[in-house]
Length: 251
Length: 251
DNA sequence: GACATTTGTTCGTATAACGCACAAAGTCGA
DNA sequence: TCGACTTTGTGCGTTATACGAACAAATGTC
Image 1 (tube, chains in turn blue, red, purple, cyan):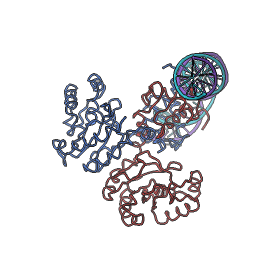
Image 2 (cartoon, chains in turn yellow, brown, purple, red; image 1 turned 45 degrees about the horizontal axis):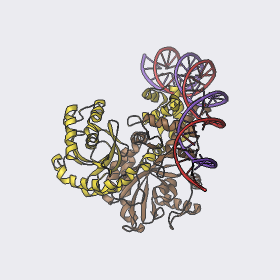
Image 3 (spheres, chains in turn cyan, red, blue, orange; image 1 turned 60 degrees about the horizontal axis):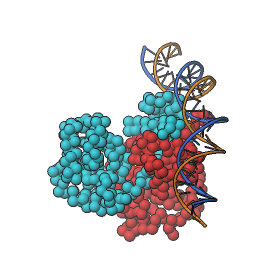
Image 4 (cartoon, chains in turn green, brown, orange, red; image 1 turned 90 degrees about the vertical axis):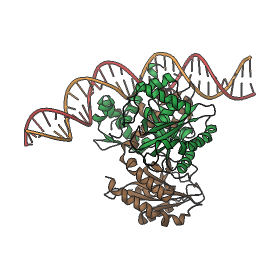
């Protein structure tokens, strides 16, 4: 791609949108400038543009994003066959299991939730489509990493900050690679409170008709309710069922 | 705002993202150009920029959005207190009612789902955070429109294409205004198969501590399962309960 | 297989955005 | 209330981008 085929004004604007986040629901021009590392004048123009287009509100001091910004993500969710195809199966699965079920894909070092059916809230953090978790310590992340060539999986791990969220979190790259190998062999991944204490989950890959892994499917449950060791016998058959039902639906 | 405070390259790029949608999961440069009304060269640069940043994939012919684009919507969902505060209550409500429950806000002539808990799928269309429905024929839309000053509500209706989705859809502006008046009086709205045959729903406004309407909450049910006339006695108490529980949580 | 049409790309130029520097306004503590 | 500090708004020269048209490539049609 040539230099001139890149619209830096657009790229800068997107960076500004991403500056908003959990910790930063409202941003002043200077704050946004610090977060993005862009010039204040540039950030100001981007924010005023967002405001002019109705993607943001401006009270003269702080900018906040408006729900219109969801149109951007929605363009993906409705445009991509995956979430639409998957949702009804997910609802069924969630109901049968009595636990929340989710589907995610890999984006860099993180898994991104693209669909979710929740029976009840099991985590301290609130998950929804678009939510992200580090791949190395999430059941769906393990499954998705296991589907990659070893070198690529290792590369992703090397780019990840492997921190111990709980005492049980596996953070040693070699141990994780061995775990990925096991996941690849058995066709599912189990996480026992590696992401958050009190939460365990089990995931399987979703494959298309040609056997390529296109996403991951999981069921999460409170550890107090279901021990990690029970996950396999209780939920794996249900997951396999959904996995098989979905397989012919992906091109 | 001055002319020069508007970054048109950014605005154009956002328009290009929005060109993707249910009917258009994959776009060629020319297609995107036609949808957006922008010059082909401009669209091309925007798309190549998206691709360069990882927000889109390019196979040499078609562009598709990647899950990374969800970061943009997620910036709003996680930055806004509303979805996070509401979700656990929504899950509870949905479980108690045995039906799907949602929260939405108004964006122009449409309601935008910001949170959702689904027990089972009741609609032909798949709803998720970011999904949109025309306000005039949705229960949450009625509630949100009823919360506006009459002139503003009338203005929104005048900008809406009032089409009859089903034989029961109300499309006469005067009738709708009268309905909004009723909704304002009784504090809830009931929709009986106006959006889709076989689907009815009931909604109440969510207010902050000062009594300002900040969102709408609804329960949707298959008409075959629950007649519209039963909605009030079966679900209104539950909705009121959640409404009251949430009220002090909004600033 | 040749023609017509659509699509993607390149290029020069007018125009608009960038970022710096300065001015103005607001904020806070003494 | 004052003064120091922070934040926001503006003017301007430089740099980069959008435009439109023209060209090249691919696609579709007879």
